[in-house]
Length: 172
Figure 1 (tube, one colour):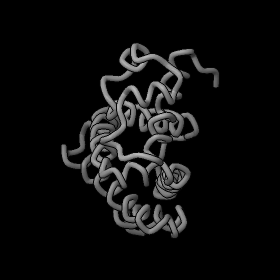
Figure 2 (figure 1 turned 60 degrees about the vertical axis):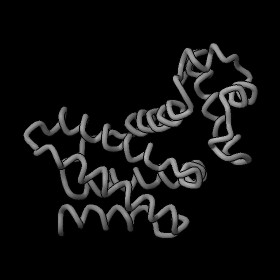
Figure 3 (figure 1 turned 90 degrees about the vertical axis):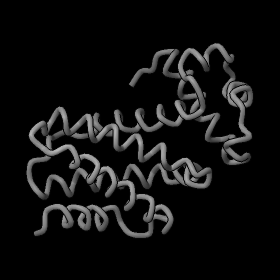
């Protein structure tokens, strides 16, 4: 995948924020700190982001888009859902160090807000007949299970968690 200069700038800014979060409290990290670490100017930061939270949202959106590119089918059966949810948990585990930084900074609400917004949009597009609460049920389940798993150092396999989640929704 080829990146544009703008995408590289966003990537560098995102990486800089997370590297700084390894050393400093989130609240104490300034935009100036981020741009110095990223090797870009303040204008570049503000061209792409309004604030530090926007950088985190970009991180989630980038990962979601990459995940969707890797999905080669539309889930139709219970087994398909297990495969998709397993893939979600694998991606989550790959990103566990970054997500732990967000958890340590008490920023997990950004993840929950992102999930709620994305699930609501996806349900509106793919399942317009569903009630308005279904996307929040799925987003809340994914959020709570993934946060508990993160707190448990992702000890269980992604397959185990996926099966547990799908069984809660679609009993065997």
